[in-house]
Amino acid sequence: MNRDHQETGRRAESCVYLDYAATTPVAPQVAEAMSRCLGREGLFGNAASRPHRFGVEARTAVERARGQVAELIAADPAEIVWTSGATESINLAVKGAARGACGRGRHIVTSSMEHKAVLDSCVRLVQEGFEVTFVDPDFDGTITPESIERALRRDTILVSLMHVNNEVGTVTDIPAVGRLVREHGIVFHVDASQSAARLPLDVRQMRADLVSLSGHKMYGPKGVGALYARSSCPSPLEPQMHGGDQEQGLRSGTLATHQAVGMGKAAELARERLDKDAEATAALDRRLRDLLEEIPRSFLNGNQRIRVPGILSAGFACIDSEALLMALRDEVAISSGSACTSDRVEPSHVLNALRLSEKAIACSVRFSLGRYTTADEVGFAATRLSETIADLRQLSPGWAEEAMSGPQPRAQEPRWATA
Image (cartoon, rainbow, N blue to C red):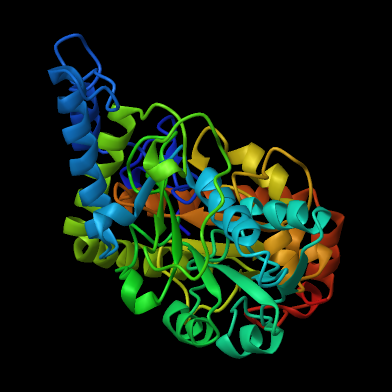
């Protein structure tokens, strides 16, 4: 790669953000809509205070936002429950559905590469006497309908799967799984946190009973999420919070009007911009992948054909991912995996589920692109990445051994990367 940074049109002192899977910046239109709900002259009232105008205005704004979220996923607004984020939505869906259906059975099916909110909720349910089958993905990171069908039992009451994996970007065939699960009368929860702003969603086509969403993964604010709960769900949800009758009794607590309005506006923009954003991200994704493949002894994790553009996991031989992140931290923002576990120094459970070796996991990083990513930023990031990897490899005894052994054949997963 050309080492002249000026050709990229990006200055090194301006850090490039390529971690959109962790969080997205709030869209300007969203920030503006939220600001109108905060001050004394705005919609600051309590949406549950029905007797006066301030409460009515806040309630109207919240319900309009509920409709915007519903429209994004082709749902009925009455089926949208406000939460504090995807983690709470997932907890309400997984624990609420399991506890609500425990009279019919106590078996749950999920995958070993789910978000920690799903995995930890399942661990909690195991402590309560439930049984959980954790389906492993194929080596390329895909969860097939066939693997889910094999895991089902007569006492299965819940299946929980993510639509788009947050580390490798692989897409699960949710409609196919939904048809299968619906035939058995089992509750089906879909974690759509990463797919809501990237793929078209229709809960009827997905045959989902529960769908969890996150505001800050779709250019909305942090601290707000939503759960789609189908009105004819096979089993009732048991609330996880108590203290009021808000949200149909499923989620007690005073609604944050500005947060709901922000997520509603973000959902509206995501729906309007879906095709435009997807096309732009796909082009940048192809460019980034081409540039990464120019780096010697690089490889990609996960199925590259069944992957949403914009989430890319790549590894680089003889590089420690944490050292790479530290070296680039003031110039390029990338991650070593899910932001929800990145504060703990432990191997990625997603890459571990793909049966990658410890070496391959230790040298892998995640790139995630979004609405505001530019071609110049991708070029600058790839250039600095290549240069930094070259510098770090000069300090690696393992790289010296690689060089002495001669050229290695290119492969999506090199020999040393597999278990």
